[in-house]
Amino acid sequence: MTRNTELKIIEGTFAAVSSGNCSQAWMVDGDDIQERANAALNKQYGDVATIHQRGVQGFALSHGGKYLVDVFTTRDAAERALARI
Image (cartoon, rainbow, N blue to C red; front, side):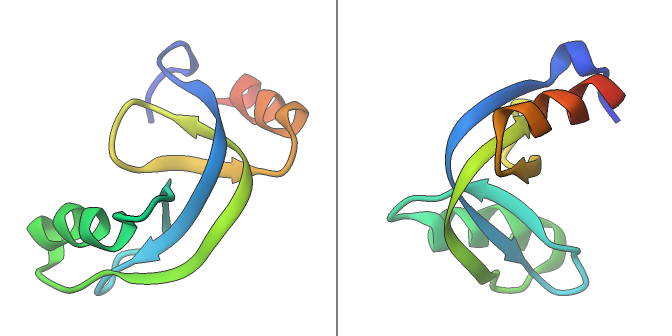
């Protein structure tokens, strides 16, 4: 895991995606979510990503990569999670 100084909280709309035996991950939602999810996951698993949820409003911990660490419903919850990492 990255150090919490490398993580930041971002506010937005998120989608939950998975592929193959990959556990669920979060990405920033958008019109191109399926395309981005396929591109990100195909390199590792060779499968088409499944979009499990879209339009989830909240606060995510981001390490600057394609995937988000987690999504929280409130900024306070995201800040508490960040402090624990």
